[in-house]
Length: 174
Image (cartoon, rainbow, N blue to C red; front, top):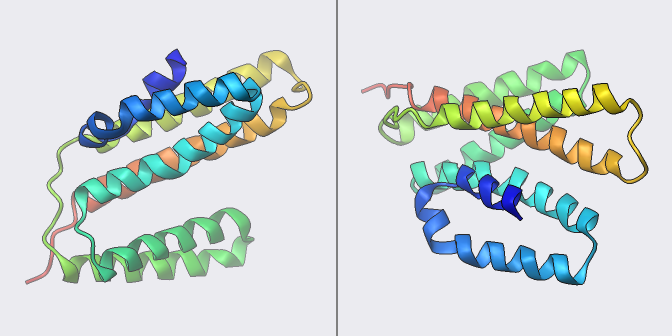
């Protein structure tokens, strides 16, 4: 639970204030009813998907353009991870389209310097996974899913940090 409470600090402060206590209570209740491994896997996946989205929501107004940008970014990430060498064309085109939509839809996001926290969290998690798997060698049964969820989480945190860092520096054309 201490690790989960620490990971909640990756959420934006306003979200944490409003929902943090409820989230901790929910995970504590789930731990009492289910096994630790099952709750840890589900919680890791939830953190990996919701932390980047909450940061984007905190910095962007809700509009159809914002939804299109987030969708294009998701498509780009999926194609980059799943596809082969020729699949790089789709993420590059999606990124170019997302940047164009973003620049025309709203003023630049102020560079407040918070995006680097996501980068550090993702890099730290990636380093931790590398150290653990180096020392343990082959993972015990059931831990492979936890390691892969952690790996996915670290990549998503790094990607969110990069996207927010770039978005904070884009200047709209007038």
